Image (cartoon, rainbow, N blue to C red; front, side, top):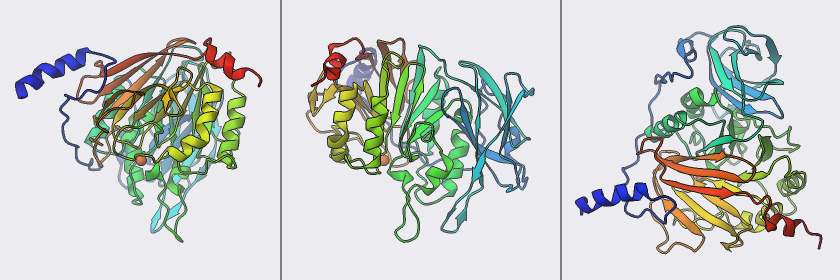
Length: 444
Ligand SMILES: [Fe+2]
């Protein structure tokens, strides 16, 4: 038995774009990470971290992350214990030589007995495309560095959902750190704080080395809700800590928004806010998609938490209502790819619409395998649906390299393998130039 597996595994690694990798033997989930921990110092980010851990030092700031905030702008977010620390960012293209300064806003929140630190949000810019910037928060402390995305193809997205903060999360982040990417996309379930607010802080520290150097664009999952009837509203911590560019995309809620990067229009939706045709989210999505100019953004990709196409036994049918309400909008707009999480496993479909393979539908990818403490969803429906192209329950992350207006290369990387090993890969052709868009745009 074992000798057979040893033969089968290398064969599976060699074959790309095949069906279910049924012979792969996966290791068990790893334990929750314990804090405090000392973050590694990747060579690309040599100047951060050192001064962040001085106990009792009110100038300490932490949980630094960045996100795109409209054309040529970046939002810098961080947390301080010191209530008097200013919401100011100094930045420039040379180390320790800041040519610009920006002021922003701050917030904080209470949740049961917990009071958050001062959460700062500062938008900086205009910034040059595809350029490294050095920055410092609050007028003191360590220097950080990020790179802005390019304005034109190629552009690469790292994609991983359901992260949590376990040894597997760390492994996923280490793999992503070795990938050359421009923007991180996260389809929900970030910290797995699950009401224990300190876990938001430790999650912020865990992801800081990556999230302070590339924009992290996130949407929310069920683990972000944290509502307590009569006590706490939903998404209090998430909305306070992970402010996304909803105002910049004319949304009235941090739970759904869109942004453009290079030639890609990215739409982030909320699986846990109203989505029926009378809802604000539906109206916003319809208006947002109607404004997309495919000459400017030939690609449309969409993220939300609960998958619509899922042949795992876990969370079956949970996305059905949202799918019946919103899938026609995505289809009419010619969305190319949809990323979801929630199911702790990986699955990729053919282009699909209304439950069957359709060359004018979107490729749906479930990538809820970032490494959380709940472990993997290992049971699949016995016979895969005709739309399911690849499925496997292993921790990992994905990379979407959009090469030009018509071609993108998607690859999925298992944590058990070295980063360059792709466990699943496929070229995706955009709908631009296909008869699909022409037919959809035809007046009735
Ligand atoms: Fe989830």
